[in-house]
Image (cartoon, rainbow, N blue to C red; front, side, top):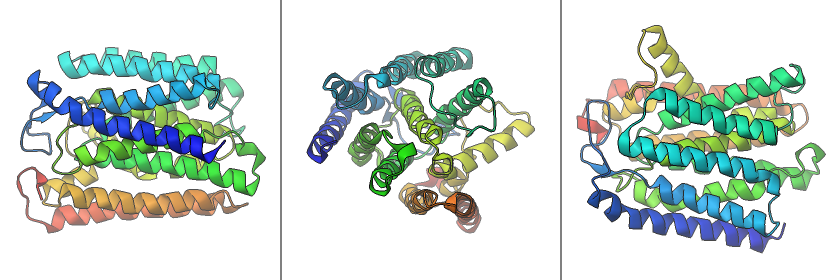
Length: 346
C-alpha cells in the first residue's frame, strides 16, 4: 500500500477528530451533557462528555472511505457496522442511562456479527477445536471491550492506550512486511493507523486538565475496534503480540475487578480502585500517571516486536508480564507514598 495514501487517510482522520472534539465542547455543554464529579470520579468540575462522536466518527468515516476506494478490504464492513451500532447504543447510555443488560446485549450482538460474518483465524493456535476457539475468542473480545471502558478513569489514559495498542499493531504489521512473515500478510495496517491518528487528535483536548471526555460513545467502540485488531493479529499467528500489547490494561482491570467480585461488589459500577486511580487519588497527577502508562506501553511494544523473532514469543510474554507487574507496583507505591489531595489534581 502506498505510504502517501496511508499518511493522507491517517492525517485526515486525526485532523477531523481534533476539530470535531473541539467543536463538540460547546455543543455538549449547552445541552448539559456533562460528567459531574462524584465520590467515584477523578475530576473536580463538570466536563462535557461525548467526544467519542467525533473520535469514533472520524475513524469510521475514514475506514469506510478506504473500503470504498479499495484501499482496505470490504470484509472489514462488519467491524464498522458493529462499532457504529455500539456507538449509537453507548450514546443513548451517555445521555439517558441504560442498564447493564442492554449494553451487554449490544456488545454480544456486535461481536457475534463479526465472528459469524468474518471470523478471524484460530486465536488459540489449534489448542481448541475451531468452534470452541471462536467462542473463546468472542468471550475474550467482550471482556476486552468492557475492560477498556472500565479503565477510562483519568484524563488522557484512553487516548494514550488507544494510540499505543493500535500503534503496536501497525508496527507489527510493518515488521511482518519487512521480515517476510507470510502468516501476518494482510495484517490491518491502515485501520490501526487510523485509530492512532484519531487518538492523537483527541489527546490535546483530553490531557489534564481535560476539556472534554470520550464518554461511552467513544470508549466502547474504540475497545471494540482495538479488540478486533488484536484478535486479527492472534488469528494470523502473532498470539504473543496480541496478548502483550494491552498487557497493562489487562492486568490492572482483571486484578481490580476480580477483587471487587470476590468482595461481592457490582463490578459494572463506577469506582476508582484501579491501580492508577488509587495513585491519582493519593496525589499523583493525571499527567504523571498517564506518562507512566506510556512508558509501560513503550516497553510492551518492544516486547511485542521481540515476540516475532523465532522462539522469542515465550520470552517476550514473560518480559511483558514483568513490565506490567512493575507498573502496578509503581502505582501501588505512589499511592502509599503521597498524601491524598482532592481528585488527584496536579
